[in-house]
Amino acid sequence: MSRTDPAETDWPVFTRFRALLAELYPLTHATLELELVAGHSMLFRWRGTSDVAATAPTVLMAHYDVVAASAEGWQHPPFDAVVVEGDGDDSGRVIWGRGTLDDKGALVAVLEAVEAQLADGFTPVNDIYLSFGHDEETHGSGAQAAAALLRERGIRPALVLDEGGAIVSGVLPGLARPSAMIGVSEKGITSLSLRVDQQGGHASTPPKMTATVRLARAVVRLNARPFPSAINPAIAEMLRTVGAHTTGPLSGVFRRPSLFSPLLRVVFSRMSDETNALVRTTTAVTQLSGSMAANALAERAEAIVNVRVAVGSSVEQTVRHVRRAIADPLVHVSVQDASEPSPVSPMTGPAWQSIVDAVAVLDPAVLSTPYVQTGASDSRHFTGISDAVYRFAPFEMSADERATLHAKNERIHAATWLRGIGFYRQLIAGR
Image 1: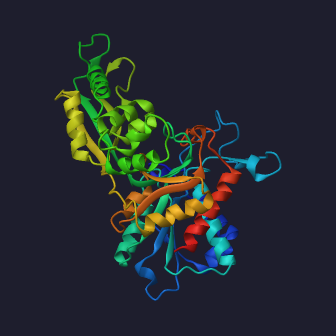
Image 2: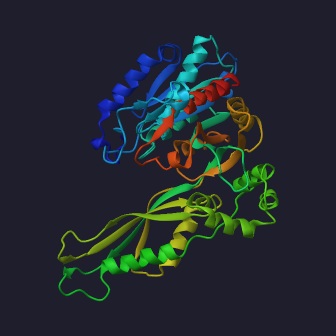
Image 3: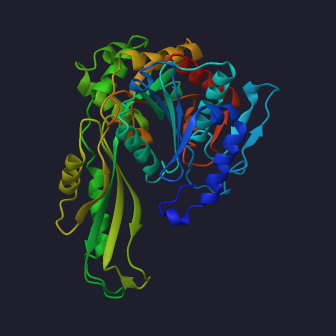
């Protein structure tokens, strides 16, 4: 499990995991070159046959740290990797455990694909790197170090693929086909502190406006003033793509996102939390702190706001909006850490097409479409060394299964995971 404070992390568990991978994937460890980066992240290099192999490499990414979990509320213990049998074949089996979706499932699927290709005697034309981070859920220092190392060596990948979108159904009204949501960008992530410093005192004689009341008012004001919505280029292309396969009254609207942008902004804002997050910057107050005693007024009240900055916006614009929404100079707004939205990767061309082709081999009925990743991933650290950075895990995920990410009862169907291995094998074969 990742911990914000590295001193609290159980590092021997990470070491045992890497040792287990060496046992399970002997050909990969015997053939590929492995470096440990930032102490715990793994960077494999699979040398290609081309004389200029290093000029157009592929980077397949995943991370092996997970968010914390307790056994409370889980149908099966979160770290026991329980396989529940179905009807005697893979279609009914379900793998339960923390990390099955986020993101060890993808990591071992990549390794299964590499191991199988090596067993078949395959060698890629261009170099392939496997970058497996150890702290994606907290700092992302492993991915940052790996990207910096490749930059120092003059390596500019032709394709980077990390976790992100999945194969989903019912994503938009009128679309009957399952969709592979391939992230071509991701929202920025910023933590803001809202802080009120005020004279303390005994709770028996409170002033009308305590520090906590002022802070609460600021939080309510911010929540009541959402950021403006917009249809960015990636979402517009997604709509045009699905519009060609959509039936019903929204089909024509989806095919003309520029013309119907005002209507689409309203529809996306109201359809679901997921679609609302696609079209605007979002804020969520995640932590609150006040007095250290039940009978003492808070001398400092603070709220931490997790902000996901929309593509086309910026951290600077976000802070301006927050200050205007709060409209109180006694509430101090400061940036704790910040990451701007990622550039939009090409939605056509060889790198994009290699992913689309691999999806088609996985299941010809699946429609591949670009979209914007709302969560942060390690791939954002690679946008400085590659123009083609994508975010997609080749697994079918229902709404219920997506809801288990960072929550209880995380799980994946065995058949889905096995098909994902096929996706990575196809992708590797084309590189």
